[in-house]
Image 1 (cartoon, helix red, strand yellow):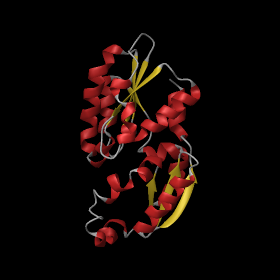
Image 2 (cartoon, rainbow, N blue to C red):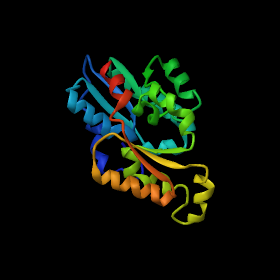
Image 3 (tube, rainbow, N blue to C red):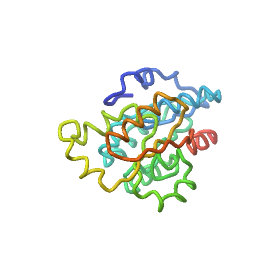
Image 4 (cartoon, rainbow, N blue to C red):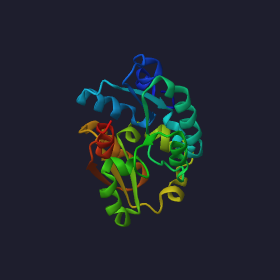
Length: 214
């Protein structure tokens, strides 16, 4: 896996995968989900699942995600019995789903990771009441500066905060793990954005359900 701000995840690259063999499934995932997938594999003994990640920074240009996924599926599919795409729609406007349908591969259900971490049904039920909520996951708390603060230019122009976040009222930290240090960092993120703070433990939500089916 490559991508800004992810040196500690370097061990999760394609080069680190076990050699493909019959009966194995490739998880072709967003790099922002790598740590969670590795944890789920270890906790459940899913040794038949290999992992390859595309750069998490693709989320800053979601129009590039379908082509990147399509190229990666073509590169790997002959070596595996199955390829499962661990992306939700992620801002592609249905184009990723269309690409997966053309390729004959399945993908995670949901509009984005915030939805499937919380559970798609639960997230949809809250949607109208949380239209002014800004969400962070464990990954985005760790990589807040690399994926939010600096790309939006807030490190150079803090006055832009109101333009980007003036219509938000709270920051919701969807915690995949119980980590007081991440909780403290998420609180700091909320303070920097001038938003109220809520921590919501979601665990792995529908991500775990989807992978268990494999």
